[in-house]
Length: 410
Image 1 (spheres, one colour):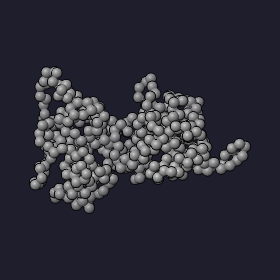
Image 2 (tube, rainbow, N blue to C red):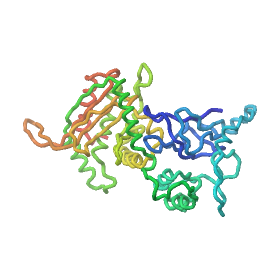
Image 3 (cartoon, rainbow, N blue to C red):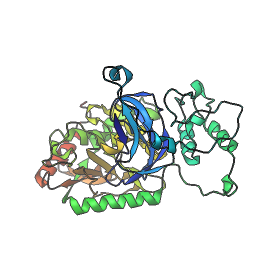
Image 4 (tube, rainbow, N blue to C red):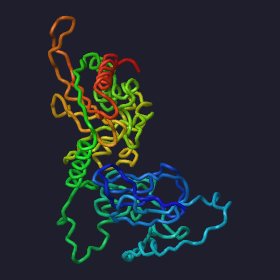
């Protein structure tokens, strides 16, 4: 029997609020399965379990704010494996029984779904397999567990209207203001908390990481001409953007300077063999999150473009997975949409490098002895001087430049 605890979702996380369980006692889980949703300063994060087995007990209930390391659930071997060993004595259930004491729901003609904290084997309604992003966001905002909502969509999927109907059916306490009088905020996001978390992480980075900075101007004419030809027969939703080319060039350049890809968590430092490229995403209400595109080294350009669209949409909706928040090995940041020429970033610990790209724009450049306007971008590197030096960093930026001059090479 082992205990599944509240994971750390970044250097700036101290605690999180359990929003929803996606499993019940008796469910079988495999390593990497999403079992819960936890709200942090970065939004509502889907939490993955670290081991395979059977959920024996849920030790926390939705709505609880818990510190990193607090017990969430007990996980044991599946019955087939457990049958080979003597049966263990029953463990005290006082803690879980106390957590399960919740107010009695109002009477309803429909059978009430069992609490996720009920013992395995008790009657319960199956957890909804599907829910629209809007429904999930509204459920988080209203504090409604999706398992309590009867879905009317295809395959029993919970829709936004289903959540609103469930909310309107709940009795309103006498001392609680009406829904239209309660303060509203974006589900899963607290911008003030996010700002504090960013400040804490960046303060730590500047205090502990000896940064050095380099910049390099890159001619993008070859890349832009190739993109134009490649996109000529594509629909708008399938077109490739320059940002995908910049990410691909950054990832491939790491094969020449691999020490820039990794997480400095133990000494001596070892670079990562996989590239989990963080993508800095600006939130519409303010704040910044840098989730990772996992195993980017195995993606072609179309896959990178698709992954970028997906992760930007989910980041701004507040729906990310734990692995995307915690496993980044290098970060790419761009303020090109704001029109700035260059940015010099702060490394996100425990990573050891951050690549920045400014706005691509026409600039006077000398080509074959003639000054002419060329589309160009300024690439910058912030790197950890404990891991690399200016010569290696310069080699890395030069390799990004070379790869962008040959965009047709797959």
